[in-house]
Image 1 (cartoon, rainbow, N blue to C red):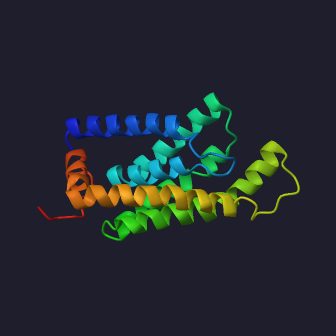
Image 2: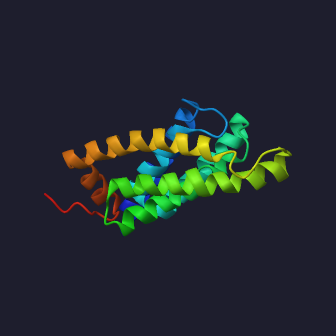
Image 3: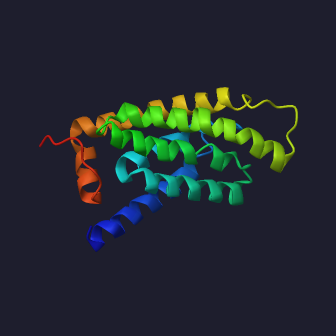
Length: 176
């Protein structure tokens, strides 16, 4: 990959991080941040699983630092981001697979991991390991639906393919 594409990838990732921090308060309640899932899936499709993981991690750290969000900002984002990108690649670029990856990664894995983190670090007692699952799944369904329709619209217009091509990402839609 040439230097220009690397710089462009970093610029796009920085824009997604900024956007993720700014729009994260929309529809947010503890354990549910739909806009984070929109960013995770979009980043996973545009840049791949490892960029999505880095993007979700940085958004989480910024939100925890500036907004006082608990560690749910990380446990509720990183697993879904990377699984979204992996399933998108494994499925040869199916957008629904990226959404499913976010739902499983965040809605189930991230929610279950959140229980010991919040119990041990924040002293939240009286919870069960299933406490966060309904909220996390609800958030991923809302954000995932928005991401699905956004990316589907971009795909149908050919814009998604062009974005991926210019970013040096895997392009699955070979139509001209």
